[in-house]
Image (cartoon, rainbow, N blue to C red; front, side, top):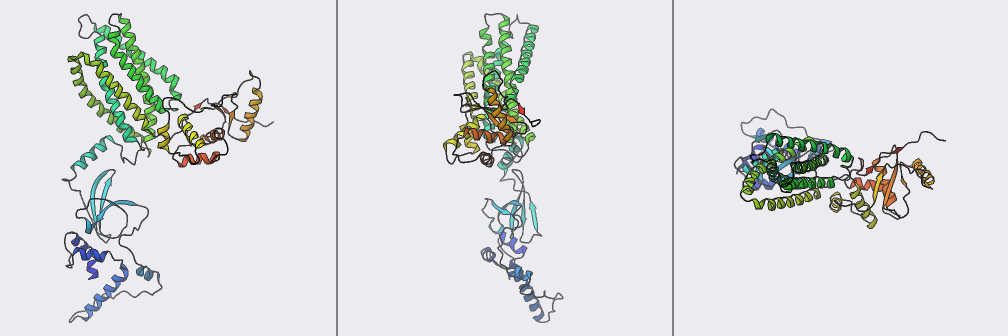
Length: 528
């Protein structure tokens, strides 16, 4: 009967190939597909059972009286008469992964999205990040659910992949990082492997230049040269960071490539130092290795600064520490692989001296290509000068410009600047040139009305834009002023609307801009 068909035990019996009432799975599925008013049918069944028990010979009437009939206009009666689908979502807020319905589990492995609270028997997957922890079989009634571990025999590959994800990928991947993470990490790991293998070749050359293997070599002389090399490199790194630290945020991709080119030059100089100084004095070799170490120090400063920016960019949910930790794990794994390959490479070049430079040139070319594709895969959401020029060019040349983050990053010029040269926080010109007083008066008048003002450019130099800023100027104000000055009328958007369009496209418009800032601000102290 209907009450038996919709009981939890009948559902699980149908899954296992039969039902307590003897009806087959197809009949049960056909009845389950109908929209039946559950409460009304249950009340009717209870009344029929009570009447049958009272009319049976020798039977006794049930001690429980049937429920009182509801008035036709009551809310409960209306709810009972309203048809309700078994698979209709009940909660629009919380989503879970659910497998196919219990009476369709055989031969199905695809997942469907269902909402918590859905009626009907089903199998839920309990997940912790990308890992499936358990299966929960839930009956039609919410009071019955069986939790079981997933089958081990069929999930060896998934378990291995899950372990690798836990070891090398941030928790919650891919939802916990921004787009392009895996592509960037793949190219970054490849260039790190090339650097490690070339480091094996350059270290061999340095040790040869220090006299390892020669009877005339002195341990004290080798130690002294090594100390000179490290000391000069540290001092060079300090000077480099002092001069260039404010500019690393302006163009992360370009400084990343600079770091890789610097380490390429350093390794090349180390490898060539025994050849360059073969017939020269010991001072020549010391100067060569010290210069190479200065380049390595510059690479370390630039690479470390840009890596911090890239890590913050990829940490979508504020999980910067997790992203950085997994980056360290990936680098360790690459170094271990490079160590194994480096041992074989060292033995190979010892037997085949003529192959040293050929292998080095190949690894250097592969290193540069991998680094270029790595920075090209970055889809940074911050606005710097190259990306701002691409945005302004699209707004000027199109009635429906594409402000998409990925598209603009793909068109960004990494090696050379094109378009406007923009500087912010500039000081007003002095009195040395005639007419500067009038220019200053115009700029200050603009600053009374708004937070930013353009300093009048020299004649014929429209590609150079300098902005004077008030003390309360924000990044949105700067973007609006640049748009107002760079895009002539008629135009699609007003300045404030343009900034809102950038924010809607995914750009970060409320943070510091990647523009050269002279740090000069103006504030009114009194009115005269």
